Image (cartoon, rainbow, N blue to C red; front, side, top):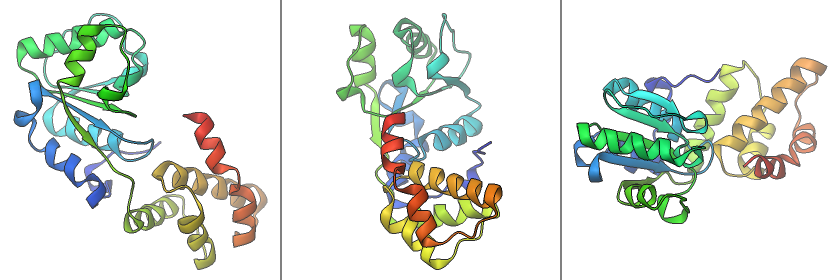
Length: 212
């Protein structure tokens, strides 16, 4: 299970703006901040760090339902896939009435989303919105080092270079690639060569797109 400790987060220029805004909830427009970016960019990790620092209630947008009255700061992961928009609207209204900040994450910014409830759309579009950009080369290299260390997986220079230069430039792709290589190394006891990595991961980009 992936951990979300503050010391395990990889800070980089691509997420510097998000980290800066998380330090200043008093400056959020209408007390709300939406972090958006591609899968695996670190927005969920940042949400957990912020929630822990501010004693916020963490909620999973994909399973959010019912009328929830906030008792303090709130952090909603995957707020763009809430099954019942009335639930999120009620939550935002309650937080605003009590003066509690609300942090949300999403794959796309509110301006690019369509909403069945006009009131919900207007509230989200009136929130502070910050993008976490695509990771830099240095961040991907650091992430690869951490992922392989977690699994105690030894990769040669040729395999590392292949992963860093041929895979989709996302943290999600890097995590999935390392997981696939680890399974092969464990199941087959096979030596992980560049050729084997290329064979195993040639469809990774397409597989990830189908999961979106």
